[in-house]
Length: 221
Ligand SMILES: Cc1cc2nc3c(=O)[nH]c(=O)nc-3n(C[C@H](O)[C@H](O)[C@H](O)COP(=O)(O)O)c2cc1C
Image 1 (cartoon, rainbow, N blue to C red):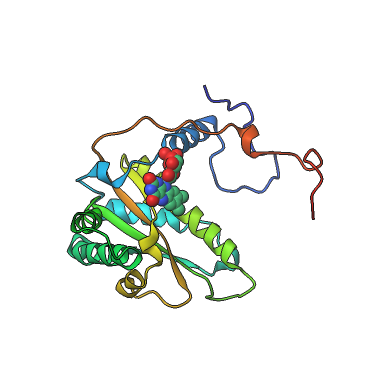
Image 2 (cartoon, rainbow, N blue to C red; image 1 turned 120 degrees about the vertical axis):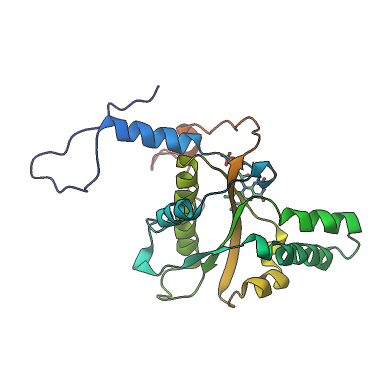
């Protein structure tokens, strides 16, 4: 059961954030966030989101925090017509790092590009705009953007997954996507109808990732 007793109404004279602060919204948000889970691309089938749903999902990314409004990330949609080319890149990247890869392994690599009806690549720009905003901040912003996108996909009833892999840093992938020198491919985003699910993972407790300044052991720095 969710605890919503922490919620309060805005006090008189308090600036409004223009958001609903009732318990229903918080409960909904907590349920949505808690229900998002990875459904790997091999478990995602058609239909994927239609054009209107894709727009809603992508708009969610625009609400990510973005220091300096640099928009240091972008998504590249990989339509079905481009999946064969992506499959070739996966196979080429495999051979690049393992020249002894078998024909079967190359075929498996190609097949991975065919999964999930809606596939996007998330790219971060490490140098656009203000150089004071370093790569870590840009990647955090990209992470927030993609989480928004995953949550909206979940809210619309779709399964989703992020996948990475060594091909992301291969020259052939950078060439296919026309990445600039300063850009890095972060991960693929797969979205589609859930065909089957595995049991979800156990989430960490708050105590596992929160501490209080002063309680921790003395720093070595
Ligand atoms: C940037 C990024 C890349 C990921 N790449 C992979 C991947 O290549 N293969 C995979 O099985 N999961 C991948 N994951 C998903 C994690 O394994 C998954 O989020 C984790 O197991 C927690 O499960 P949950 O998403 O269901 O909470 C990736 C997650 C992130 C954030």
